[in-house]
Structure formats: C-alpha cells, structure tokens
Length: 377
Image (tube, rainbow, N blue to C red):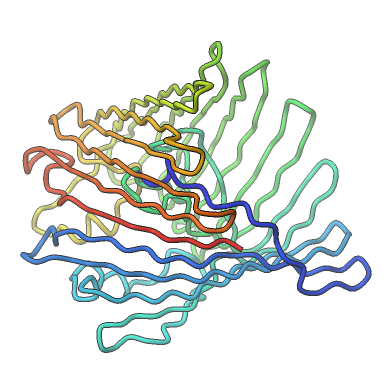
C-alpha cells in the first residue's frame, strides 16, 4: 500500500528556455524500485529491479494554450525477466491507442524501454478547459477501490498507485458556476465497441461534492455517482456504479469510506467495497485472468480495508494498511516506512503479507517486500 505513505517531493520546475512570455520548464524524477517475492505459478524466487528516469517538459505561452510532455526511460533486471507473466506482458500491445514505446534493450537478463507517459495540449479559458493528447483522466473519490474510474482503476495492492496509464483522447470541463461543472471525455478507438467515453456533472452542496457519471467501457455501459465531504471533522466518501454488461448479468459496485486526521499527525481510514460483478477466475488459464483484470476486479464480493499512518518524527512516516476478504476470510497486511531525507530525496520501503486458503482472495498471493529510492527535481 505504497500510495497511502508515499508522496513525491515538491520540487520546483526549472526554466530551461525563456523568451519574452514563452517559457519551457523541466521537472521529473529518478527512481529505483526493487521488489522481492515468490513466483505464484512456478517454484522459484523473483526479484524485480527497475530504474526509471522521467523528464517532464511544460511549455507556457502566456496565452490560452499550453503543452506538456513526459518521457520515461526504464531499465529492468533481475529474475523477473524469466517470469512467464512478465514475458507475456512485455509482448502485449499497450493499453493506449498509440504505441509510443521503444524497446532499446532485451537481452542478457536486461530489459529497457523509452516511452511517452504524457503528451498533451491544453486550451484553457476562464470557464472551460479542453485537453487533447495522452492525459490522465481522474475519476473517483475512494482510497482503496474506485469502480467509477472506468479508465484505469488501480489495485490497492499496487506498489505505485500514483502511476496511471494515460488515455489517448480528448477531455473537456465547463465550469458552469461556482458550484456546478460538467465534463466530457473520450478515448480514441478504431471501433465503437473498443471505445471508452464518459460524461459527468459535479455539484457542490455545502461541505459535499456530488458527481454523476454516464460512461462506456468497451462494450459495457456504466452509470454511477460519487460524493466526498465532511461529517463533523471526519472525511466521508462513497462511490456507486451500475454496469449494463455485454457478456454477463448487470451488476452494481459500491464503496463507502471514512477517514480522520488528528492534530498529532495520526491518520486513520476505513473503507468497505462491494463488488456485485466478481471476476471469473479460470484456474486452467490464470495468466489471462491476471492480464485482463483491473484494480476493481475481485474474485469475491465484499471487502473491508483500513490504514493508519503516523509521523514518527518530522522526516519519517510509518503506516500500516490491511485488507480483509469478508467472504472467505483471507487478508493482506502492508506495513511501510518513508524517510524524507531532503526536499528532493525520499527513501521508502515495506512489505505485503498475505494469509488465507487457496480458494480465498488473498491466500494464493506470495508475501512481498519492496524498497524505493526517488529523487525529484
């Protein structure tokens, strides 16, 4: 549960070119992420060492138009390169419409790629904004599961949940008033059955913000709502979706959560998730299930999650996350620590411990340890 603990250091972007009102700013990060676990399908141990360098260029013109591009260079080594799942994944077409990835190294136990993480043009006025290109489409309010995010919902087990695959498409937002706005989003596709699209409206009522969404995820149609606000000093949030499915019965998904932050830096959160459309896992073909599943696809229906974090001192934060499979009794525990060594450098690490029967949600998962070093600039 790294996302509950880790937040990139806020480093100011550096101006690398300036002429009159035209400026190009550079920011980014260097990161080393190492994880160690057992292969869930074959006997053996897996180590994954991945280095990433990201350069983000932002072009400011002092007009309504701006641009942004993020380029990633990644290098992976370790026994993960021999894992059947990794071998299958690297040969798959990317989830984006355009394939902007180049493999510059794939030999001798090393694998390297250069790819485009973001590439977009923005047209922004006082009452509207239009973005074209590879962008992040941020939907949802939940902390662990976000069924209303039809674009790229992230698993609560992800080591880098802040990393969201971009969508090649166009989005727009219209600020109708101080309390009401509307958005529309469309991801590029060759055929309508392959497209993802959504429209939503957001309404603020006192301390609550309500969002209402109608969308299309490939051949399924998804209708949903979410809210976020305060109940006293505690934050409350919820998501609800109803999916008109193409190949199975229609189903609902729902999330309800609450969190609270004390003045002494103690933070606690609770969340309940109901998945009315559980994923059908075929033991005879486990790879397809893992490759096709998203961050909200689960085998069972009902889950509870909790996490706490606390500043052990001004530079060290500790956290503990737990997810419980209410149907089969399995669980995950994820302790983690982060050391904010400087304004630029963060060192974090942790583990994920799983317990349960082979028929449960988390029982088949092997325990995992991870360590991350990140320099933001």
